[in-house]
Amino acid sequence: MNAKFEMIFRRMLCFFIILSAAGCTTTVRGRVVDAETGEPVEGAVYAIHWYQLRGCCLGIRFGDGSGKEVLEVADGFTDADGYFEVPKYAHTLIMPPIFRMGVYKKGYAVWDDEDTVRWDKIDEYKAGKRDEEVIFPRRWELRNGMVIRLEPWKDSYSRYAHASFVSFFSGRSGVNYRLFEEAVRSERDFIRKRRKEYQDYLEKLENNLKRSGKIKE
Image (cartoon, helix red, strand yellow):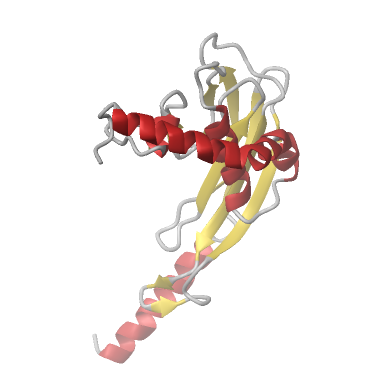
């Protein structure tokens, strides 16, 4: 196979794969439950967006080679039995679609598809104590029959860090989660008003951890 024929073959292969994958979406149904009781959680707001990274395919450059292209955005509330429906894109060999998903309800710790957070330890982590696993990948799959378990909020959890995390999730995608944004407005207002107070708290906590030897100078 000479170089010219190889280039034509690669371009045609890439083109047909893209065509075959275009528009391959389904709707999947899941449920949100209380992590402790297993009871359905009604009125939890969920948000998901699908996107593709701009880049290269078999040596062929697409777009500007950077950033991402948003494919679809969806948000809503769980019904009386905790059920919800979200779009799912088919996996492709090239430029596979990627999703980010979050679920929130007041009185529970926010859930997202990427991270599990130890909310009772997050402040020490932010203050510099990193000898304990606090944030770690979540093992979860977007599929029919999926169950999302919301953890009830406890007084020992960091209200500041939680509000910051919620605000970061709702704002980092650059997309408009209309219902989700409205539902988490109180969290965003809280961290906006208390940011300086929280920074001062973390500084004091760091000094205390240093004095106790839990953080090395």
